[in-house]
Amino acid sequence: MSKHSMGVAGGATGNESIGQRLIKRRRLVSGIVGLDLQKSKCRVSTKDLRGKSCYPLGLRGLNNLGSTCYMNSVLQVLLHAPPFRDYFLSGGQRLEACHHRRATDLMCCLLCDVNAIFSAVYSGDRSPYSPAQFLYSWWQHSANLACYEQQDAHEFFISMLDAIHEKEGKTRNGSKGNGDCQCIAHKVFYGLLRSDVTCMACGFTSTTYDPCVDISLNLDTDVSSTEKGKKLTKQNEDGSMSTLSGCLDLFTRPEKLGSDQKLYCQNCRERQDSLKQMSIRKLPLVLSLHVKRFEHSFVKKCSRKIDRYLHFPFSLDMTPYLSSSILRARYGNRNFTFGGDQSDMFSEFEIFAVVTHSGTLESGHYVSFVRVRNQWYRCNDAWITVVDEATVRASQCYMIFYVQKTLHNKANEDLSHVPNSPGRDLFLPIAGCC
Image 1 (cartoon, rainbow, N blue to C red):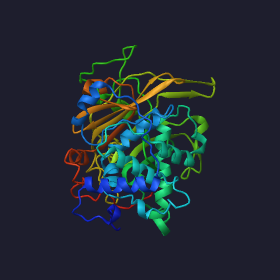
Image 2: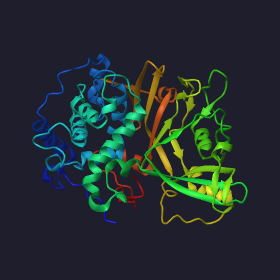
Image 3: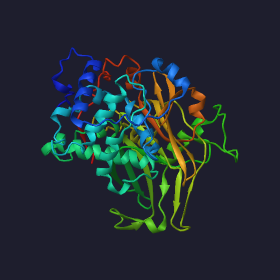
Image 4: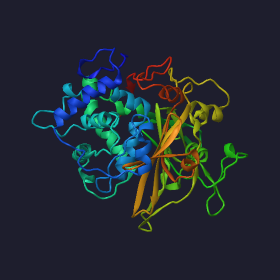
């Protein structure tokens, strides 16, 4: 496999700093797009204006363009996702060489518009930014969501990654097809799930693998065994507790399939009762966990939001949920090889962002919290404020984002150094996605 080349926009030399590259790319963006997206300004609190110069580079509010808090909250996460951020700040998307942005159609390249957001946010300008051009480009990809009504942040996240893959994957993959996806969306968020279905009559196991860019979790109802003995301060109204480890335990727990879901056993040559168990075959660089808070009942023909508090750790070890760990627990302490996969070596993660939802199913608001240099900031559309860890822990999390610990440690260094995990190439071609 050949290493992915992180080119520099505009033919920049390796001696140029990221700041110099940003200035060059910002001029290029303004020359190509030719639009002033900064005419609409949201007011910023006096407290924020006084302290704005002390904020790290990259903290900039995003104007609400009409019920677009779902978009702003996810964009703030992506702006601070270390490997995703470093790709754009290092010239991974070169505007002048873009195959999608033509002279006759300057407004329809989603990747160029994501690139423009990075240039604007990391330019040092602290006034709120309006991602109007990006919204227009996203609407071109997701016409069914092109309206000024509130949308689901998780649905937007999946749709955006899909759009990036569609735009960039065709160009970078070339004749390789779907075997080795080269797009930045999959390089950063791609993971692989393993599903084992075991016949309860003969023990025959059928295994399938499914690519994913996030993991959706049901809320558990009890404290998991791994959390017992720990001091958890906040409980739900009924006195019970939900924990992220409990949700992951529930996700990887063997589940007996119902009588209407009997699968055909190749060994018994008939449909039999079976057990299904999920596990994680490959971990991504950035782990996105989606908490299922919106419940839809087709029987009762109604929907509701689950306002249940979830305790989540800032440091997360995913080892218990890997396929290797699940198989050892099932068959004993045997040696299982997975073709040189490094998930066991890179299973420790650190939190860097949380997307929260407040309100009801019909009327709610999305806000994101981002962690920059071990300080938490609340991103509420155009407003950026400093918060403490307790505020983040007490929030009603909807999406939780973790980054591999080695990348998190690198991300706390100066932005002039592009993080690179020791002993591992961040941008190796990925097989098996799409």
